[in-house]
Structure formats: structure tokens, C-alpha cells
Length: 268
Image 1 (cartoon, helix red, strand yellow):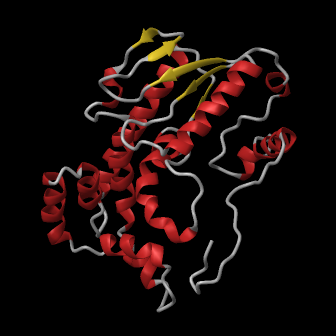
Image 2 (cartoon, rainbow, N blue to C red):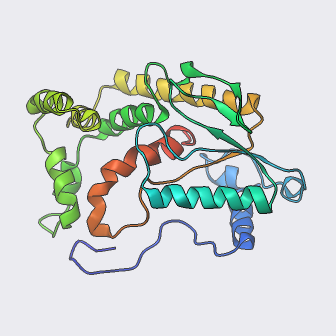
């Protein structure tokens, strides 16, 4: 990555696990009996050795496209290779599902076993639902001006300049710019501009956003339970790892990350 002074520096986010044993050790620490006592945000779910050592085959759901942002071919290929290896060499049962209103279905060996178009109402896909609610929720704290002001004149990485200009667009111009993007066929840009307003949202609006996200989580978890899905494999980004100066691509990765983490698995 690059620091604000422009110097190059290697970085990593989260624990680095090189082997399965490392992951197990990390999970045992995170999900220890003391974790829920020391951290109010951790549920009392200690690591269970009997589950870890069980020989029962898992039923794994996977998705490559959230219906709103299509990952680049390299990410799609990586997903397909991973799924192929686990299914062929390890013998797990895989369930492919599309998270779009018009085509949502669970497929096992080409046979449709469930259809849930109501899951995303009134949106058309998981990605659109995630994008709208993500931008609405993060708008509660205002816009990017707070962060750039905190730099106190320090160097702003070039990759942030486009995002900065978008964040500082006056609210009075947002409806016009959003409409122009929509007329030009740029639906997603129109949504980003409209929802990225400065000044935040009201308490009532924030409550509604939280309610909508919670209701979606419950519907999605119920769907997983009904189909006995143990876990889901999906991309964390629409792009492979990029240089920090290419952070403009964050806007396109954002719905993917929101879909798979913020909306489905975020603890409130």
C-alpha cells in the first residue's frame, strides 16, 4: 500500500493463515468461552471440537455474482477452480444459487428445488439491496469531508481523488447529477450519487435501514436453514488484489463486500 506521504509499504488486514492448522488455532482463540465475557459483541458460541472433527460432509452454497456487480474473469475462474477442487477431491455437496429476483433458485444437479423471488423485495438482487442499504447506512456519519479534513493538509493519495470529488458534490446538485446518470443508462452511478449525500440521515431513517437489513438477514438465514446449507463460498471482491493507487475501484467492489459481509453477516 501507499502511505499519505506517498511511501510504499507492505500491509495486511486480519490474521494471516498459511495452513488449515493456523485457521483452527485462530478460531479457537476467537471463539473461546471467555470471548463473550470480554467482548460484548461476541456471542457465547465456543469452538466445538466434536463439530470440527466430525466426518459429516458439508452442504455448501456458493455464488459468483450478486446480481449487481459482475466479478472480473480472473475472480470467476478462481471461484470455479476452488469449487471444482473441493467438490471433486473432497466430495462435498455444492448448491449453486443466483441471488437475483427474477432467477433466484437453488440448483442441485440441474434440478430446481426452491424459488424465492420475494427475498429481495422491492429490489432486484442481493447486490442492489446491499448497495442501497450500505450507502444509506454509512451516510449516517456524513461524507468523506471529515476524513480529508483530518489530513490537515497532508498528501491525499491520487486514487482517492475521484472518490473525494464524488463525496464533496453539493447536495443541491445530487438529484440533477443522479438523474443525468440514470438517463445515460448508468443506473449504479445514479444510485451512488443519490445516496452519497453529505449531512447524514435522520435517526428514524437509520432505524428503518437497520430494520430492513435485519429482516433481510432473517429471511436469508431461514432460507439457508430450510435448505440445510452449512456455509457459503463467495468472492469478497469483484477484483483481484490491486495496488493501493487503484482504490477508485473500491466503488465497484463495495456492493460485493456489502453483499457478503455487511448485509448477511454483520453483527448489530
